[in-house]
Amino acid sequence: MAVIDLRRIAAVLFETDGVITDTARVHAAVWKRVMDAYLRRRAAETGEPWRPFDVREDYLRYVDGKPRLDGARDFLASRGVRLPAGEEGANVLAGLACLKEGLFLAEIRHYGVAPFPAAVVLLRDLRRHGARVGAVSPSRNCAEVLARAGLARLVDARVDGVDAASAGLPAMPDPAMLAEAAGRLGTAPHETAVVAETEPALRAARAGHFGLVVAVRSPGREHAGPPPPADHVVPDLAAVQVSGQVPLAARAAR
Image 1 (cartoon, rainbow, N blue to C red):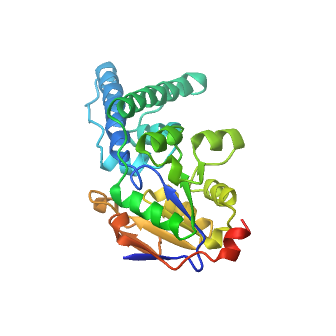
Image 2: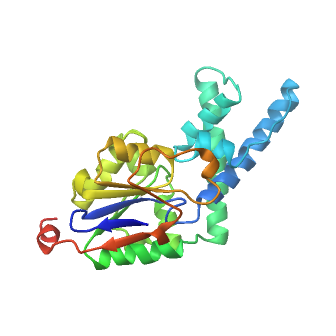
C-alpha cells in the first residue's frame, strides 16, 4: 500500500498509458503488427530467419515509455538492423512511426479507451482533498486518450509529445517533461508526487528529485526486472491511498 500524504504533497503527476488508461496493451499490440510486417519483409529480402516482435520482452525493453521514433530505432538496433545513413534511414523510422500512429488512432476511435476504475477513484479523491492532478506522456495522442477515457475533466495540466516537441523538451528519462508539468500545476518537484509504470518515467522522477515516486508494477511486467528506485511499488492504483488534505494556504498560493 502506498500513501500520498497531502500535508506535504500538493500535486500528483500520472503517466497515462498503463497507469490511468488501459492503452499500454493497445500500443504494444499495434507495435507488434507494424514490426512483424517490417521484419517479414526484411527476412524475405535478406534470407535471414524471421523472429516476431514480442509484446512483452521487446515492447517493455525497447519501446515502452519512449517517443515513437526512439522506440522504433532502439528495437531495430536490438535486432542488429542497420538502417541507411541520412534521410533514407530517417524515412524508414518515420514510416514505421506513422503507420503505428494511424493504427493506434484507428483502434481507440473504433473501440474507445477504458480508464482503470481505480484511477478514476484516486483522481477524484485527490481533487476532493485539494491536490492538483497532471498527466504526462511521450505520446502525441495523450489529449485524445484522456478525452475518450472521460478523464480530461479530472486532469488540471497535461504535458505530452506535442508539448515536448513545441517546447524542445528532451524525452524521459530526462526530468524536463515532469518539471514542466509540475510548473503548470504551480508546484515544485519536492511537493509533487509521480506515479508511473515505465522505466524512463520512473528514472525521470528520481532524477528530478520529486517528493514521492510510486512505481506501478502491473501483472505481466514482473519479468521486466526490478523498477528503478521508488518509494513504493504497487500492483495498481487500488493500492494507493490519500491521506490528509492540501492546506488552504498552499491552494491559495497556486
